[in-house]
Amino acid sequence: MPTFRFRRAAAAVIAAVLPLSLAACGGGDENKIVIGTKFDQPGLANKNPDGTMSGFDVDVARYVADKLGYTPEQIEWKEAPSGQRETLIQNGQVDYIVATYSITDARKEKVDFAGPYLLTGQSLLVRADNTDITGKDSLENNKVLCSVTGSTPAQKIKDEFPGVQLQQYDTYSACVEALKNNAVDALTTDEVILAGYAAQTPGAFKIVGEPFSEERYGIGLKQGDDELRGKINDALEQMLSDGAWQDAFEQNLGPAGIATPTPPAVDRY
Ligand code: GLU
Image (cartoon, rainbow, N blue to C red; front, top):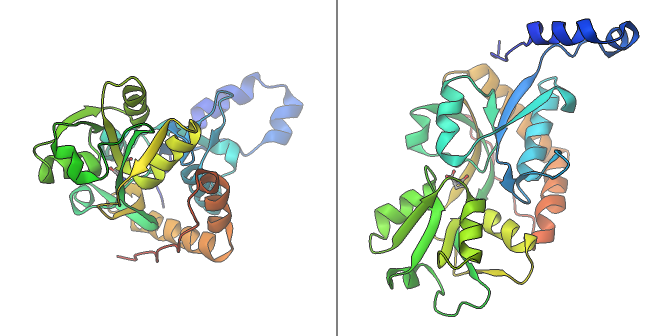
């Protein structure tokens, strides 16, 4: 059995204060699923001003939850910044994470992944009026680059571009603010994430150069929970075959100008 946390105690308290009729017909809402995602990545996973969640990752997470038997109302969203994802899973604070989360061997030492469900690659975002950063090689000229602690793009810069001045923030939205305010020259992360930010503020930014890594997005879950991983993989395959994956991509990332890619095959390791 998957180790979803049943909040019976909390549900019982709520039920006790509800009018009888409501409690009677509401029924069955005593368990929840806790899903980790980003709250600040438009197009992928964004917490809107009205409190609702939207984006491609959110739609993938909801589809999977539905196949696991949870209604949208039974989902509790938990913010999962890049640097905290493995810990959130290992501590049991989330049931699974859908948060632009690349499958890597290093992370697989701590968590397991269902998927992949999307392929993308690391790229660069600069201010629209920038002319001297045209790709990754321009960065060596004393450029200040922003990325996020615990992310694969930050790690790649440290490993392969030691001459670059890397500033690591906790979130990409903090990097976007820094880019706006001229505190940094560029922001690096996955192209789909950058496209979401560029679309959010039309005319302010542009993506430059070609992607220079391969990122395979997976759904992170507790290591060794093969049953849950199998069920999530089943759900992802269904999402691909019934067209919901394509619809979710077009709806969330189409407006950012990204053509719907060919989805990857799920890896049943
Ligand atoms: N996909 C990369 C990663 O998992 C970058 C995006 C992110 O930080 O969420 O590190």
